[in-house]
Length: 187
Image (cartoon, helix red, strand yellow):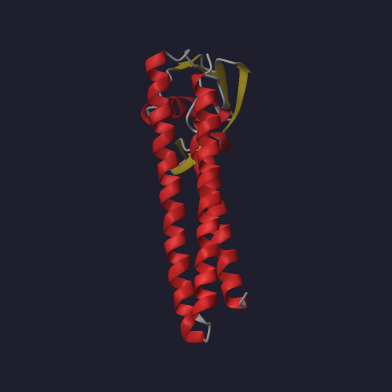
């Protein structure tokens, strides 16, 4: 296979792997009824005028399967952390005792589980769309290689390889959905 097409395929594969990693990361934000410090990823607190991740201004631990404990490094920011959690709309009510903040993760109802599965499928569809967009860009790049002296047969072969990669990565997204759905629906 032509060296230029091989480079395009390598770029395509690494981009698709990043799309899968991003989808997995988005799935970690969707809680499955178990307390996890990653549930607070993406929540920032105003720390001396800078928006800073909660994990960078406090220790976050899980004491049991249903409780997250946040212990700020400075007691004066405990109110700001509490406000950031409430404003983030993750469905958890912080309990502030002046030293630590406790978040009780309620058991999921059947209806809430179904809503979370829908959310998982929405995120997965975003991952699939990203993979398809990468396929489109890779195919366009491969077609442009015709100007560099690459034969049409090699271009067709390259496009076939891009499609094989796309199919393989779509299957990975489907596997991720299956695992996350099973995780959410398990009581």
